[in-house]
Image (tube, rainbow, N blue to C red; front, side, top):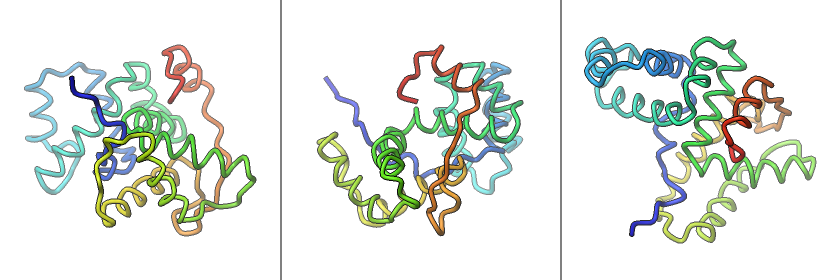
Amino acid sequence: MLVAKLYTSTITSSSLRLRESRIIAGLLMNDVSPEEWKREIKDKNVLQMGSPESVNRVSLLLRNRLEPLGPSLWQMVRDGDRTLATQAVFAGAVKESRLLGDFLDITVREQRLLYAEKLEPLLWNEFIAGCRGRDPEMPHWSDATIQKLRSAVFSMLAEAGYLKDTRTLQLQNVFVVPQLSAYLREQGETYV
């Protein structure tokens, strides 16, 4: 029996990409057929991306983030104001990437409890080292991949408002929109 890896590097493929996520959410809400999906994503290039490889990679990642959380979340992404839509996309990213979710849960939460004003860059390397204990099957990533993962995670944290920006890494309070929070609780998404 194959055991799923807890930590993967899929998150390096994309930041939150709110604009593109809104498009993907719309396609999911319209319950498009595989043929319609291909036509919209590849032929019409609704994501407006340069290369077919990027279109395939990003559309699949965004679909994997949003699809498991269901139609009500898709509507929040497609129709919600910027804050709600961003938080909904971030929830999908947390569900899709245990690496992002655990960093937020373990490292960012601890720094908030310590009243830290910012995330120190070395915390990422400490977190990655700790991941090996939680997931012995975790791939051995190169230093470049680890830095790319750090960049993607910190970028998402900034987009979602947990960091003021990726330069200062100043921590900020985030209040999850009640509509999203209630929906996630109703769906049993306690981790997210």
